[in-house]
Amino acid sequence: MLSFFHNYSMLSFFHNSSLGGAVAALLLGACMAGCGGSSAPEPPGTVARLSPAAAVGAQIFSDAGLSASGKQSCASCHDPASAHAQPNLLAAQLGGADGTVAGFRATPSLRYLSATPAFAFDQDGAPSGGFDRDGRARSLADQAMRPFLAPHEMANASKEELVGRLKGASYAAQFRLVFGAAILDDPEQAFDRVAFALQQFQKEDPAFHPFDSLYDQFLAGKAQLQPAQLRGLALFNDAAKGNCSACHTSARGADGAAPLFTDFSFDNLGVPRNARIAATADPRYVDLGLCGPDRSDLAARADLCGAFKVPTLRNVATRKVFFHNGVFTTLKDVVGFYARRDTNPEEWYPRAADGTVLKFDDLPAAYHANVNRSEGPYNRQAGMAPALSSGEIDDLIQFLGTLNDADQPQPAF
Ligand code: HEC
Ligand code: HEC
Image 1 (cartoon, rainbow, N blue to C red):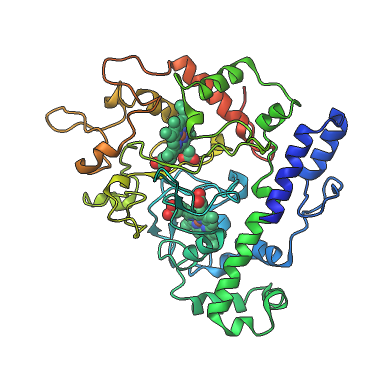
Image 2 (image 1 turned 90 degrees about the horizontal axis):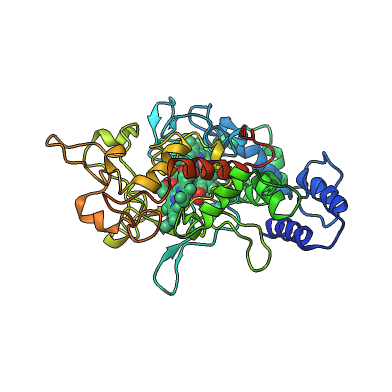
């Protein structure tokens, strides 16, 4: 946490400071190039200084030798060139020993996760926080253990098998140096340290939270947005139009902290079923998010079935697929779905033999009432005008394009 908040407060300090713009920009530029833990800005081009554990974590993150296939690392699915999300159009990635075992969910970005609170119910009983799309992992370390053993991901048969692979890694000596000479003789402890190292890497490396998008520059008063982007921003925040900021926070916090474009809450959008998820070949298969099947502790909470975590929208224009099941491949479809889910359901859902539109076709009928229909933009009914026109949707997409980090391709305007 330390390093993350350090970077974070450093940015907000510059945003609020009375330093001359040029000086602030210079310091900010230096920080972007790497300010992994010291209070003095480093010269541009300096590699971020990571703690010893995080430096080992960086090696583990991109080591395909730790998978059963020998071909898959964390970085294969969470590709830095795709803002640490999936690099391809598959709805869910393939893994396993021979690289043919299909996964169940689209791969989320690992950027801007460090400030995610642990999963909890707030005083109103609303769930929030946690890692994974159903919030089931308590911490980044807890989360990091799963992919190594998941049969559809890196597919080690046991912790022992993983640690056996680690012993052959080029950085095994470095791992021993950081965590103790005998660490690799104790698979339980070693596995625990692997997860810790990955957590520290994600927390400390500024590449996971650079806060250097055009929108960040705009908030800092250092860049202007185009008219269409400004219109999109207004629609994003307008409760009677997009209402996006009700869940995807767009304004700085009271403490000046840069917005993360998520409030860490969960919601049920009634996202269409995606036949490109292999498991859906079985009509009984449904991914109900908070209430299972991946998450097991809330199985009795029928009211939470179908709810998924609100993801950050930073870098969303670089995503190849959208929503937990990757059902959409363009932002035009995503924002169109928000605006016209209820006014034009036939655009999004299949029809039954008798012509009826099968609304919310990825949820058993018992859970249809869980779908959010009370909040804009999805508080409409058939026959009403959509909350957003097609031109307004285009403007919203132009605004979303301002959320790409500086190392990502910038959308052409
Ligand atoms: C085969 C592709 C694949 C591999 C390999 C993989 N992941 Fe993931 N990752 C996913 C998917 C899919 C999810 C969403 C899982 C869910 O919601 O249940 C995810 C979720 C996560 C999350 C939670 C993100 C959030 O929004 O809460 C983190 C953190 C993460 N992965 C880190 C890692 C690390 C570290 C590794 C390497 C040890 C790794 N992943 C390997 C596909 C992959
Ligand atoms: C009531 C809360 C809520 C509101 C309002 C809301 N969203 Fe979302 N958004 C979510 C949730 C929850 C998800 C994840 C759903 C899933 O994975 O099935 C999501 C996902 C997304 C995604 C997909 C991101 C990804 O990485 O897959 C985009 C894009 C998006 N929202 C944009 C918007 C826009 C634009 C608006 C306003 C028009 C908006 N959202 C309004 C809750 C909300």
